[in-house]
Amino acid sequence: MAEFDRSPAFWRSFPIFQDFDDETITALAGISSFRRWLPDTVIFQRGDEGNYMVGVISGRIKVSLITPQGRELVLRQLEAGELFGEMAMLDDQPRSADATAQVASEGFVIAKRPFMDLIKLSPEAAGATIRYLCSRLRGITEQLETIALYHLNSRAARFLLFTLRQIHGTELPVRADLKLSLTQSDIAGILGASRPKVNRAISALEEAGAIRRSNGIIECNTERLQWIAEPGEH
Image (cartoon, rainbow, N blue to C red; front, top):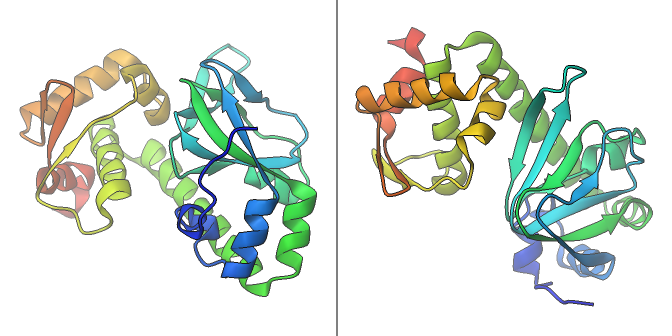
């Protein structure tokens, strides 16, 4: 079996585990197993049993829903340091969405029973898990608010700001470069709009001086992006 970094620093790079004590981290490494997925591999589907969770080491995983009309709604795009599959594992419900490797990807898998046994022995780990789930719920609420209440230009600006904060934290520099691994179709799925409309929104951000595209890099003026993201506050 292939190996991967099992150091405490590696495990704590995942938000759900960052407050686990050293003893629990060691036990966590012992119950994990390494996996590789080829591009377009379906990791699980909606309705499957939720008996494990996955942490992404490299690559990109898409979590999505397919409507009865055949339209795909992209819920999340996950890269290194992110976790998925934990909801169904923790609430004893079936998978609520599909998970697919968009590119060659690597990750670790933690099965439900050993993880539940682990957090039962550690109140700190149980508390950290609850805080993580609450933060996820807040993120989902913000995503729904963005789609429901904001014009597409604002949604595009909020998406770029959110992505930048994943890199820089809450205090963003006035100018920051961003290299997206997502296609415009991926972004369209996240923003709940068609690709042509997203193209027009991105062009509008460029015309407003909020971004400049050059050789695959998006040069962002975060102050202008914030102004467009929250138009009612100015």
